[in-house]
Image 1 (spheres, rainbow, N blue to C red):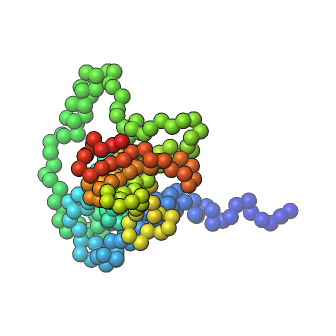
Image 2: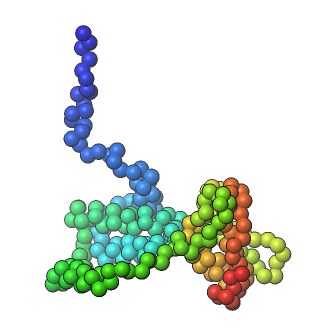
Length: 234
């Protein structure tokens, strides 16, 4: 008979401890990128030494979430996803709470029963509209491609150039110092790509949005001209 045990004795002890394996490491690394940016700018763990003001981190997190919700995925100042930047803000705020370093809890005074009142109000609104219209989303703005035309239909690139120059276009770069793999600003939202192109057209003269068809193949789907606003799309 074998003297080997059916399980490792460490299993019993290990299974009762926090399971780091449930954390998605790709998300963790993006949060770390946001925290590293803050450490380089302000000094690592400055929030534990100096403390924080609640409203500062609430405002910062909400700005990132609002930018993402309105179609901007990447924070242009850092090159980090807005959602990850928001989580970095909340990580600092929660650490300060856990370590008694919220030096100013400047949240507003508590309102009276606001959540219950809001819930009742929304229930009444929903009851009055039992058959609501479908929501309008960014996905609805994407062009419909021919069958088999693209394996990645929601991938767009923005280019721009001067009206006075010849046939050349500069690609939008995501942020200074980006790696070769991230040189192109890839947009998954067509409306976001349109907004960026319109902004660049106003600055440089011309801009266009290209759609990725296959690896290495792209086609122009919209062109924007300076001073023509929404009417510039051709």
